[in-house]
Length: 551
Image 1 (cartoon, rainbow, N blue to C red):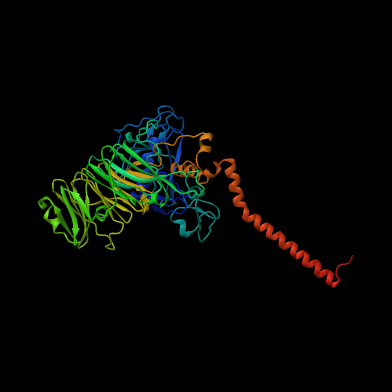
Image 2: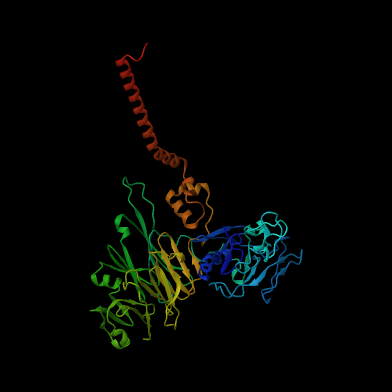
């Protein structure tokens, strides 16, 4: 095991002298969650993150001397290379600025590293830190005697014996990162309400014109005990959130049976929100969430849901033979480049009344038209030329985000080129991710209550799995909750091992689970017992018939 005691792009093994490269992208993934969770940790709480074969444990603590635990105060104006001395005991601590060669999203370059290990020497010189010794008499040798032999005992040829001190791997060292951005955050006043980000499948998301967004999800429900046949009961939840994650309105509808899974989607048309389901569609007021009307879902509504029609820029547009056709209104509001674009596959209304056009002609292109008619064109160019799994979203202020093949690329307002933000499953981008662009970053929603927000540079800004912080529940509350709900909550908040939910079951449930788990063993024991008795009976019968047995 090789400890990483210093923030660097290369780690050297003192046993074999091999250097291992750690790229800036790996440091970015390792430190993304510690930089977000660190200010929210409780005193003495230790958490761990892993990336491939690397493991990092982190906690929150005050800057203190390792020898006498006296507080340390590094100067932010220091050059970052001089060691820091303890005013109480005089102990020296390595101190430097964060290396500019390893930029980390969410961490300023003025951050200070304290207590790191020594810098690795050049490759090939580490093992020569201790002078070579003769393998027979352990006498020190210079470089010229390596081939001539030992002057004391005359051992030829010479065999170099490496010092055990140089071959011993170093012990892990705890190093600290000090920055103003890592100030403690109190967990007693959460920004969001607990239980809002609670669903079974990835939700449907639609942005609002004021920067908020609407979620349509199926939450975990409880089966009714009055029915003899237990059916799945779901809660279809529709809620609107402000840009600061405060609830604007919330609607819950209990649906049982297969109808609960037929939540097709939703769309926003300015002041109206349309919810699509298997039994029809419902129009809600975007400000209050009140139901305005209900109708059966027509083919035109389904076409609007899948991006075949849209009402944007005060126009009603649709796809006609691979081009955009204006059904009513003045077509001058659309730029000519968008009107003449061939191979149009989807049109979307953007927050504020803009228009997003996804087309495939000489590559995959995304045209973004703001409410004033300005045009921005982005070239996506997928590898296989397919649009399956490609999603895009535009915020109210013009932040463009594209999700394709588990990669998220963004373009800030005013930029005409997409830049990488998240890359693959290593950055926790899964196949069922739902993308939403916000003014300050990008949202990703997944199945199992997964909701995270990232900055355009990839820094983690919000994680629903760890915030708001979980509350302790007493034995009485645990006994009243269903077992599956406790297991889901333990997995969602990462409170314990995956098997903890089984130990929290009541006594009756544990006995029933034990009986169900042991019945195959009991059946096998019964079968073996019957087989043994049958074999013994056959042996007795054969013995009596042949006269072998005597009275």
